[in-house]
Length: 169
Image 1: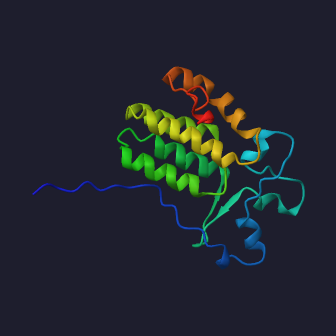
Image 2: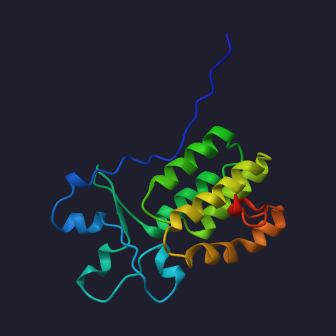
Image 3: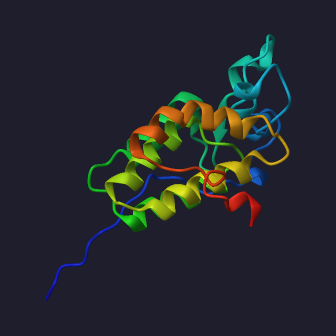
């Protein structure tokens, strides 16, 4: 009898903002306010004052807190797994897209490289489409992400949805 393959993904508990109260609720909030530039819209930057320590923290229902740096490192590590398969790639992207944020270019870079290792061009284009969709009304975020990813896109020979004409469909 064949042994079943065990799939794993990062331990990402579901968000439950109702369980956070008072000051903890402020830690759970993800704000995307227009600041100096598109980089600031990707992750909120600390502002002077007592709230500085809690602005860049992700809150989960079980009470653990994760900084932006830890969050980014966890996802880059996930997508850099040499034995990642197509299901794990899709699961990771679906989980990542479910968050109330636009992924950092370094996370997207790792995901695109995973697509290349799997020879999955469709998923690579889908990731770029998801990033554009996540940027929402903030029109400066997507061009910034593409600008940061341009060397990777050229190296991996991945076309953007705009280069493929998918934005006109």
